[in-house]
Image (cartoon, rainbow, N blue to C red; front, side):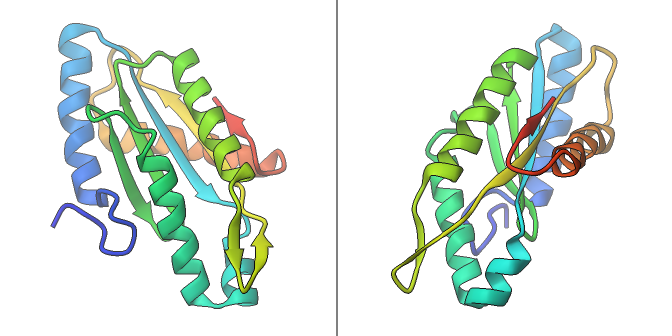
Length: 161
């Protein structure tokens, strides 16, 4: 299985294999490689206030929104829970930040609904770009994760690179 059953995004295992291949290509050909890690802000509140079925519906809808904007040569994956990743092949830091900001704004402006009411859904995003000598997918993910938590620390609903 390479696809998450709930969101139809790639799964964690597929993402790790994708990053291993892309990091080797990145190093061999000196091509840029960027990684976005994002999660839903205050997702626990959605589950607590509206129930887990609504939370699942929000995750599915968010995945549809993002997947439609990811190029075929890139990888969109569910990292775990309400956390997702987008690996952007041949994408420099500035282009990755622009893409991340477009996704952040898209989620913020989208009308997620439950029982006729609009749900306030936002994401925080960490954007990392692989340095030339990076070989380890886990280290790359850790760098993006640290930036994601910095976005949370700065107040959520933002992109940090």
